[in-house]
Image (cartoon, rainbow, N blue to C red):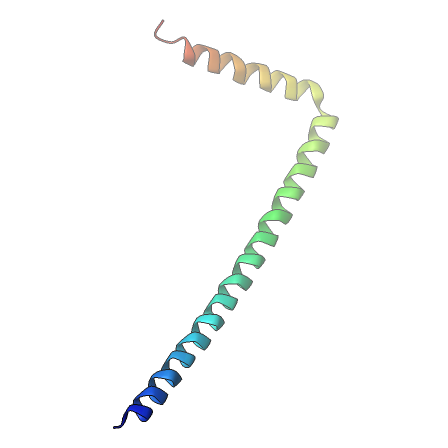
Length: 80
């Protein structure tokens, strides 16, 4: 094999590898965007449901928050 043939073969191999990497990166980006959108939609839905629940049951939420605060206070002062 002469130098030009080796150069062309190497160049072709590098080009194929570059194309494969671009294709793989595009697939990863599509998967990331899909996962991000699903996660974002789930968080927005949960936020809306939480907002609605708090407005419908404010005293329940206050009671639960006080109970959690009390338990955390006990845990923090457990060994004092």
